[in-house]
Each structure stands twice: as structure tokens, then as C-alpha cells.
Image (tube, rainbow, N blue to C red; front, side, top):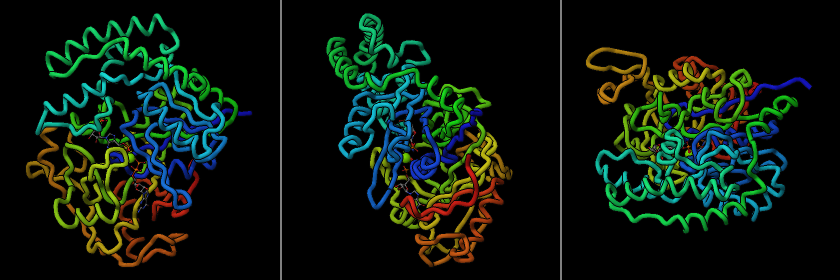
Length: 432
Ligand code: GDP
Ligand code: IMO
Ligand code: MG
């Protein structure tokens, strides 16, 4: 068998573009689905046969029995949340075989103190808060980079785990008490928890990267499932209002444990308008009744935290940059149905910063704070789109809008989503 190249699916905006829906759809034609970064800050929604599933950690291939779902080396994983998610899926008859879920022994463990630090820090920041999900993501990635983190493999090495934990707690408890005014953690309590995690998770923890490489070598089809979105990327996003991992397709290689040449195709997902949860710049944000309407019609409330999402017009500056940085070869455009009844519809094609027009996003906080969107207006439509089967079924103005988006961002559309349901999708091109 010849070796295959993987397809990466990534968000091109600020997250919640519909990655869960699209990965679930594409998973029908895949053998393995790999999450390569992030943790349960993600909330990926799947709607199949009218039933809604929200996944925070397990890859969005899980509704297809027999597909292998892999949580890669680049993830940070809260064992409590993972165990709850596995239990809930198994209660529905899913994940019947442990071979269908693989958890990298290199993934970092989110420990109770990571969550306490995340929340306490956000409280201290007050108005300057990032608006994190409070799941301990930042503090866990900090420990990974500081080389003081604990990985899943360590759960199975009593002495190693206890040593690493004791060393870490000296610093964490001092920090929690002296700077954040929080209660300290006892090593014995965490150790007791870790033993329950170990018992439950033992069937899944493995050298996941090696399994992904072996699948590709055996000619299997592998999907790499991104979380968050390009502008939440720690290097390329609206820093410091970002998450603590890389969201660009380039990080899929290290995060899944495969060489870069093993990624053959990149699908970028973009909502046909824009949303963002938490703090930070958002040039096309609508603070008015139109924004409220997008939120209501698009059901724009966080899948993880329930927070209302900030809503605004499509920003081609942002998506164009994501396409360039992630090498997007095909776009999946989502939620076009939500724009029914909006007239006119606006698209931001450039920013004006200090009186100068520019078509690239700024790199600094200062630039972002000054970026004013330059809009083009397009006529809307009033027909509901949810049952369209092909582009020909769409109103002419909806097609014109799509043509305009595609031309503004410079990548072809390969999937169009016109409703939350798996079947409410129009496929236009190959993705493997
Ligand atoms: P993800 O984080 O990128 O997986 O996206 P989320 O699941 O957080 O948010 C996307 C939301 O939009 C979910 O509630 C989906 O069920 C829903 N959704 C996805 N595609 C469409 C679509 O084309 N139309 C509508 N109306 N809803 C959609
Ligand atoms: P999915 O995969 C939308 C945002 C948070 C906050 C910032 C940092 O569902 O698209 P963190 O907890 O990661 O330290 O928070 O990033 N954020 C997301 N926003 N979708 C997500 O994931 C997100 N994951 C993190 O709201 O602004
Ligand atoms: Mg989400």
C-alpha cells in the first residue's frame, strides 16, 4: 500500500466556524481523526438526525463507529473532562472499543491547580481580562514550555509522577497563595485523583503519534482536526487576546506527530459572517440590533461556556491572511442560512489604519485598536436556504454573495453549509 497524505481542517477566524460539523461530515470518508492542539477550551458541535452532540476533547469522528479518534501529542487534556466525555459517549453506545480512542502519552495533563490559576488570574485582570474559558489551558501550556508539566505517560510511573507533582506544587502553592490569594493544593489529593484517572484511561493512553504515522504508511485516510481559529493562534493571532497554542495548519504536524510532508491538503473553515468569544479586537463587530439578530438567528452562544458570542460582518482581511498562513486549498463556508433576511450584507475587504488603507491585518495591539473596516455592500435575499441540495437551488443574491467572498479571500469553495444538520451541506470538491 502506498502512503497517504493527511487532510487538515482548521478555523480561519476566531473559532466556532463549524469545525465539528465539517469534520464529522468528512469523517465518513476517513479512517482516523486526530485533534492536534488545544484542550477543552474547544466546543465542537455535531447535529445528526436532529440530535446534538458537543465534543470538547474527543475528535469529531466519534459518531462513526470504527473510526479511530486520536488525541495527539500537542493537546492539553483535563482527565476529569475526558472521563466524563467518554462515559457520556459510551452511554449512547459509542466508543465501544478502546481501540477507537487513542490518547497520546505525550499530551499534557491539565491539573486542578491549572484551572485555579486560570480563573484567579482572569479575576485579577478585571477589565483587561482575556476572557479565557477558565479551563486551565494557558497555565498547562505554560508548564509544558517551562518544562514543569506532567504528561499522560507519567500517570503510569508512580515515583516519577509524585516527584514531578511535588516539585511543581512548591511553586504553584506559593504563587496561588502569595499572588492570587487562593487556597493551596495538597499533593496527596491530586495523587488520589491521578490513580482514578490512570485506572480509567489506561486502555487509551499510547504512543499516538506512532499510530498516526503507521496509519498513513498503511494508506489510511487521516483527518487532522483543528481547534480554535487562526486569529486565536498564539503567534499569528490578536496577541495577547489569543489562546496558548498554535492554530495554523503548520502546527498540525508537530501536534499530531507526523512530518510536514505528510499533510497533503488543508481545508479552511469560515463562517459567512464573523464571531468571537472573549476579549480582544474585532474590527467588524456589530454592537447594534444587527449583531443581536445574527446572535439570535445563528444561535451564537459558546458551546463550551454558554457565553454570548460577539457577532459582526465577514472580514475578508482576516480570512485572506489565514489562507496565506495555513496554505488553505479549499474553503468550507458555513452558516449562510443565518444571513437570510439581512439586506444589505456588508463584507470588510480592507482596513483603514490612521487614514491609510491596508489589506493585511496589523501585527500589533496598537494597529488592531485603530483598524477601521472598509466595507463593500451586497444585496441580500429572503428565502430560507436550509433545504438546498445544490448551488442552483440558492437565490441569485446568495450565489453572488458567495462569489464575492471567494473572490475576496482567494481560495475556492469546496463545501457550503446551510444548516447545522449533517445533511445540510453542499459538497463541491474533493478534500483528500
Ligand atoms: P466549532 O467550534 O468550529 O466546531 O463550531 P461550534 O460548534 O462551536 O459552533 C458552530 C455552531 O453553528 C454549532 O452550533 C453548529 O451546530 C452550528 N452550525 C454549523 N454549521 C451551520 C450552518 O451552516 N448553519 C447553521 N444555522 N448552523 C450551523
Ligand atoms: P473552538 O475549537 C472560540 C477563546 C476564549 C478566549 C481565548 C483564550 O470551539 O473553535 P483559553 O481558554 O483558550 O485560554 O481562552 O480564546 N477560545 C475560543 N473561542 N472557540 C474556541 O474553540 C475557543 N477556544 C478558546 O474565548 O477569548
Ligand atoms: Mg466551538
